[in-house]
Image: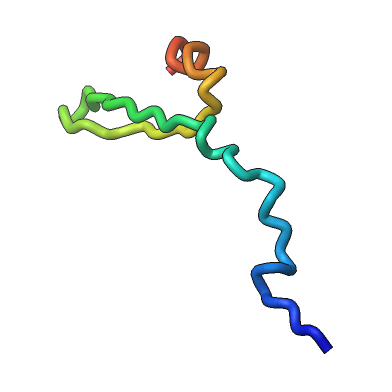
Length: 56
């Protein structure tokens, strides 16, 4: 009787390479009340990068 490894049971081939098409946007926003900076982070597809930058 053959044994199947746990890794073989999981279908990992569906989204191979999908993360290469994603980019992380980090924008520094200065608080008017305290003057401290906070960071807004968003992960978007690289095709939507320019549209997202316009709306941030």
